[in-house]
Length: 132
Image (tube, rainbow, N blue to C red; front, side, top):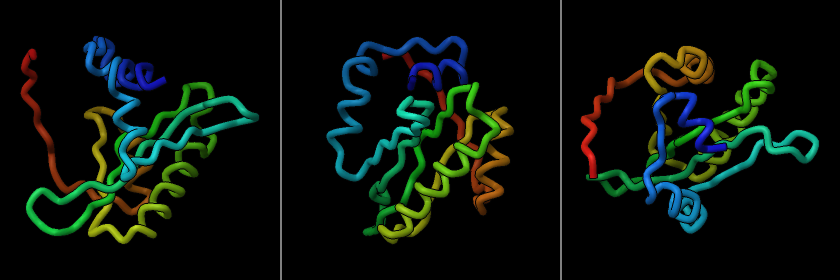
């Protein structure tokens, strides 16, 4: 399901071997990351990944929503909003300095969802791909 998420954001997505081998193991082995499956009648219809991360320069923790994915046939039914609200509530219990996330360029529906939940755009992020 994670591959579907990434491929939807980038049709050319092909996971590197390290992603295939370690992605979920690294998530599940990290006590500060929470992977929550979104279920409907026992069927996995999506997931949300969130948690805490150390601030790079200060002695504090920030909350982060890393991924939120709902399979296409279950979208526009409030599933993503319910998952986002749950993650925000759980993160607030951990008292982070802030909660942050990224939205892929062009993903207007996701941006609308997060803005409706009170998030404000703070940056534009740029990356330079390098082959490893």
